[in-house]
Length: 177
Image 1 (spheres, rainbow, N blue to C red):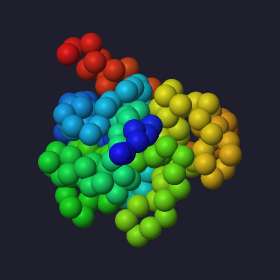
Image 2: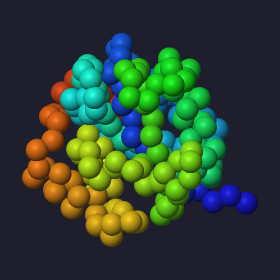
Image 3: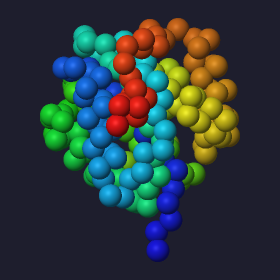
């Protein structure tokens, strides 16, 4: 029998109607029979992090519970991304929807397909700001620090711009159902 685990996901996108794309991603997660959406962060607008020039992203975090093993969850997320128009080889390219496993319970996974905790979690404000809304006191398995403490460190260094999104967000979709 599989055990339900608390999983924290990153969600983002920078193509098309960004809010609509992110909401479609949340709806697809809700429709999956082995995923329960528990909580949604606010959205944050952020400068693209990487080489080249891309439009700003909207980013947030989602808390789910699932009995899916990490690799099976990754496959489910990639299927949702591809159905929303993300190219199969879309790493670091503009995309309508990006779903990342940030944390899967207290697991540490290191293989060719998947790294958990997400390898860049602790260095990205666009992940830490919304993650702190959902799990600020959560202690990260490798560092032993809380999400909130790591977020405070990131705020003290120069990093790409990030701002709270004042438009409609993921949490607004809850009240519309």
